[in-house]
Length: 159
Image 1 (cartoon, rainbow, N blue to C red):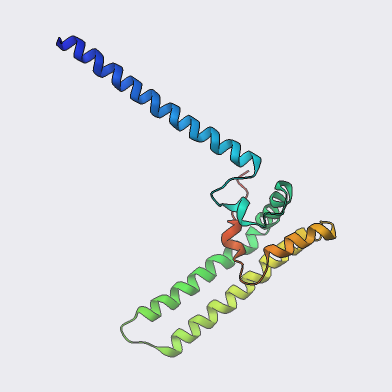
Image 2 (image 1 turned 30 degrees about the vertical axis):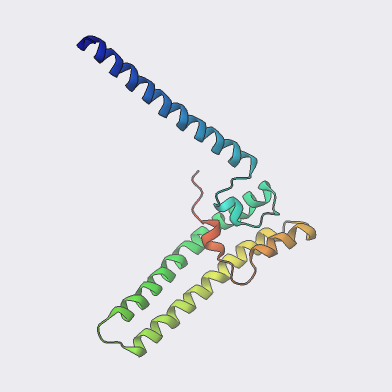
């Protein structure tokens, strides 16, 4: 086989490889788009983290209520993270200062309590707009032990 012929085959192979990678990526993106638009994304995320009985519009409404509360919740969330980090740093110290650690943990609990109050207010404000039978489903999203902030991924509205 001549050198020119080998070069042509290499180019054809690389072009086919690039085309196949492009088509595979497009197929995965299309499947993801269809799943997400249908509201049945199988890999978790905010849509499935909220109660599955909520309709897409209700999940969007609940997320919107949480986003609207983000200016109040965001600083508390940062403060709670800072308080937890302060506790961790004190626990990592070579000499344990039990009084300081207990004070830092108490501060963390206090801030997280205020944070939970703000999140609950946002959810209650949204739940008040729903009929009683749908309100039950929103109530299920705030059952004890549920980490609403992690599951809803509160962030300011990107608009």
